[in-house]
Length: 86
Image (cartoon, rainbow, N blue to C red; front, side):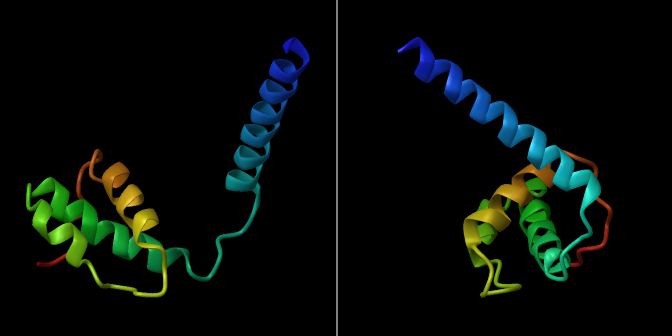
């Protein structure tokens, strides 16, 4: 039991380290701006307390909807960049 816990903690630590390294060391993928723009639409709706607009964000259908909503919820915690016009 203790061995499994130690291995699990080591796996989580390694995952976090690799994710951190990837976020600072790798180039941005070509589709990240699409994710970010869709997330900004979600964030704008969240900031304006218009949650009924969040499911209707259809900026890009080919990207996972939950990912855009999670990114939007995180971005909504920060000041707006005033780029989204609705």
